[in-house]
Image (cartoon, rainbow, N blue to C red; front, side, top):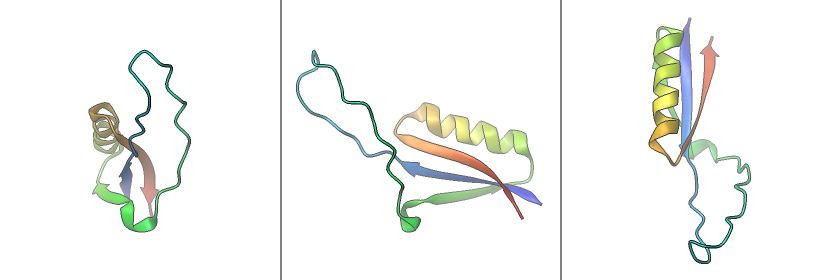
Length: 67
């Protein structure tokens, strides 16, 4: 059994000027074709990768148990 990281790009929303308050991002379920997957042997490596994708900005990531 391994670990699966699913990650996808978050759509960018830009409107108004930098001084205006931004609208809260809403959860948008991605299409199956837009989800990227990467497999890992251990949980630590999977969580490190998921966190790095989130920190990079513009990506959501989730860790799941494969099997």
